[in-house]
Length: 372
Image (cartoon, rainbow, N blue to C red; front, top):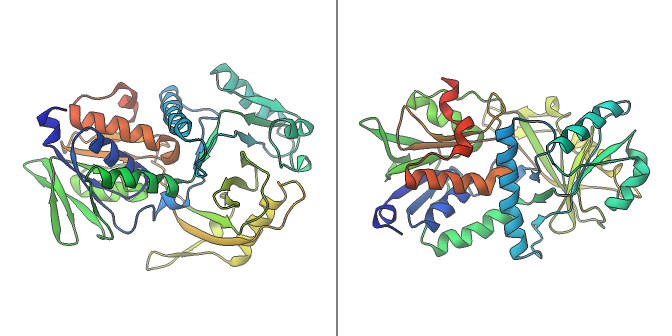
């Protein structure tokens, strides 16, 4: 490692998967890193993500290729220790509303055209490829993608933090809202809780708050971030291994013989309060659990154990935002909906750009300046 890289100090804002991953990749290359979080680690979107590892359906070719690279990095991690309960590759199952057979068939045909592993199934065939599903819940047909998986991001963050500390990273927890310090037009550090953390470069990776952090720098990044919820059930006998996405409930296995549940039909039932907290009627949470129960063979009773609500990071055009700000050299941004799938690859490519000064071609489509 060159002495130039080894002498660089990088400040990262954000304790979610993108921030932690970037920090660890920087440390691996010999940089000095301070990671500053507003609250705790994985306290925002990372702690309430369905975290389905996929590139299913239609999207731009650069985005598809980036997601495939993201999945590849998870496969490498999985191969190193397949016993980890927070990372699995058991496929993804999806179906649409009744009467949308042609829509499902078109999606399957598109996935096949890109080389994405996709199987079109009649309901009676579902049990042959993935267990534990009530086939009567499926309508005309379904798609099974064998190469997909899921990750429980808090488990991954804990795993990466061991390496972070082992490599000498500095962690500043519960620092409140942070801002980027600028001198002579260049990012020079981070201000948080009245203290300045000086750095050669800064990474802003704080989820849905990212546009607000860079706005004072004269950079506009539109946000389409909706309010969302993740429910974790009480432990229950579990046969399902795949991620399941349906019109009324999305479900994945979760460590501890629980399920993680997600959807968007209840967004209007969520109330945001003046202090920034959120609430939702308990009956609506139970309704989501009941919808998920209908997907499972035997329809076991699912009881919510906990739920978290907050903003789901989504850039205004739906595409990731990665890279250095032209207006403020030395300030790098990471803002994306697909934080789980891209978590490892984004940290890798951003750290390479920061320390080498060379832009990676896979991020060319996703530069912040496209909004200018």
